[in-house]
Amino acid sequence: MQKKLLEIKEYELITCNEEYKNDSQYKHLDSISFKELEDLILTFKNEEESDALDFFSLTSRRNVGKVIRAKNYVGVVQLKNGTQIQVLPKIDSKDIDDTKRTFLRMLKSMRDFPSKVFNDTNLKLERMSLYEIFINLYIQEVRNLVKKGLKSTYYSEESNSNLYKGKLVFNEHIKKNIVHKERFYVRFDEYGMNRAENRLIKATLLKLMKISSSSENIKEIRRLLTSFELIITSHNYVKDFNKVTIDRNTKDYKILIQWSKVFLLNKSFTTFSGNTTARALLFPMEKVFEAYVGRSLKKALSGTEWHVSLQDKGYYLFERQFALKPDIVLENQNSRRIILDTKWKKIKNDSRSNYGIAQSDMYQMYAYAKKYETNEIWLLYPHSDEMIYTEDIQFKSNDNVVVRVFFIKLNDIEVSINDLISFIEKSN
Image 1 (cartoon, rainbow, N blue to C red):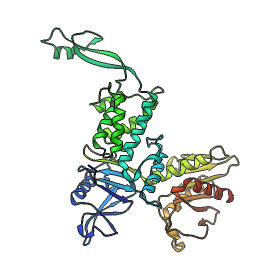
Image 2: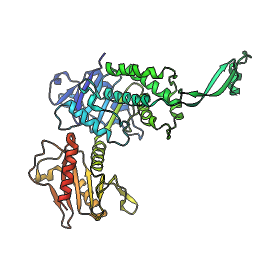
Image 3: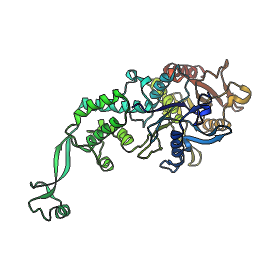
Image 4: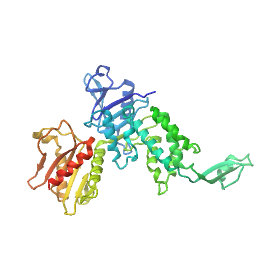
């Protein structure tokens, strides 16, 4: 049965008030699901003991009642009753499917997002929620592993049998065989594919087959499970994860083990974790945008005179205190240095209010200029159709620091990055 899906965008409001079901200012959620989401916000804590208010805010409005606002974390939350809440980024795209496709391409650029081989062109996005797409990414990774071949190794087994081999596990032997003198509880090594990594992947596939609502995903999982018929399913996930060793011989398992932790232990790629009955895969858009622009710029400038440093850590505001970490630093052989900082914000087409650019951001840019000894600073914002401008937006200080503004078109990143490079070259 298809799970109920609510699609919203960053900063949109959710209500369970029936009177506002068709109101364009709100997204409507049934009262049971709303209560579950409310409980999730109030009870979920991440590893650093910061609550889920980082991801959603809970408040009330006159005549409306309680409302939940999605913040700038994007992804999917699946509630205990099966309802999925899909939070998409505010991107100027043609439609929802185009937004999802752009978002997935952005996620691929994140260093800790475990999927590099997936092909989004074949995904039927109109039929898949983000969670089903993440399941599909896992399937593609398993398919890639099976094609290369599952790894075999020596692994430890324990057995209580009539055959003595390996080493006697004395304590277990006494416990289990006090009245069975003909048996031996032994530990021995076997060689085969029944290693921890394969057991965990099989367990993940079986779990995903139960929770998936996509007939295509389920069909592909069944097909893949035939390659795991001789492998025992993992039942003690934590124990098996502790046995996993990623080295030169098992590097093909690295991404899959990361994914398996997400699905089997309800972990997330952020610090937001779920419990056994609710799942959340949420990504901070500031980090996603930063990674997307940084990786795209690094790729475009590969083989040129420019050296690209992402999240540079070379300077401090004070002596070994308050580290400065600009998102992108460009340097060439002529000692030209340029600082670029990404901001996942929408600014206003109003020069009188400095376009709505935060004063704290400008303080930050000025500190970069002084510590990195450069007068070339760029602020990079996502492109918005609302931001129509006819002049080059820039701010100049009386000591020659220049902060320029550039807008990145997320659904046409290569063209946008090439335009940025052209502007940088012309500004010299």
